[in-house]
Length: 271
Picture 1 (tube, rainbow, N blue to C red):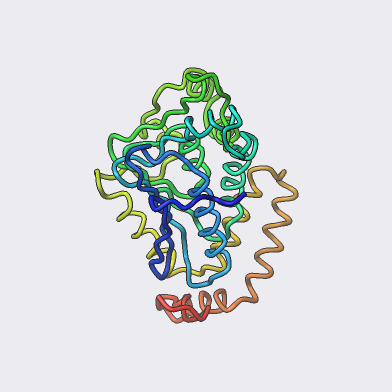
Picture 2 (picture 1 turned 120 degrees about the horizontal axis):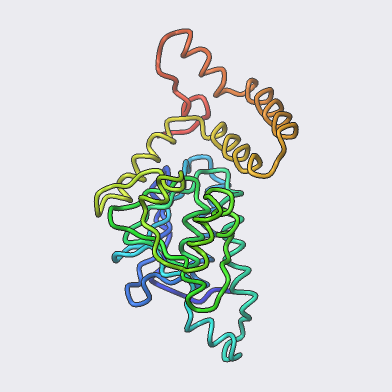
């Protein structure tokens, strides 16, 4: 399914990172086929290019994302467009899976808040920075929908059952502070500074070993579902392989020489 042209969606290439931007104040950055396509393209590019240390997701004009576009969904249900509701839902699921599969960290820089599928996208990210006053709204139950985008998986694993049930069954706004308390938000920052804070995170990531970070991310993802025996085996395999890498040799030598490691140089990258 091809995505229509949409000048409110773009990918900004900042050299060491990509920024996927949604800037449609009319819909409060509702998810769209164009957004799905841009996000998947950015994640694919980040996977292929060593120079890219991370991908940042932002929603400008005051709000991260209002979630699914209900007007578009209604047209699909009424068969007014050649796109089925299953295709729309599947594309969101593909985006969530791609965020998890991308070897580079994906950072959500949240302004205002996120609802529905936008909330799901944020919860799929590796790092979450939220501006003061932002709130998250599952919203699904309020319109007779069930959650998608892996939201029930994340909340069921990360939150007490009673809290996850309240969030999903009532669809009421959830303060960023509540999610931070339970480890789902990394930092709450002053207004108009979430993207700036995300860029600072990228700078730290870019100075590290991108190859090692990719392995760490993959281990954290597999650790969600593996039993201890399988995870120990994966950890052993990864560490044995990493110890043969230029990054590990640079790490050992810099420690012994009491200097700061230069991982970009060891991996043939520039920062």
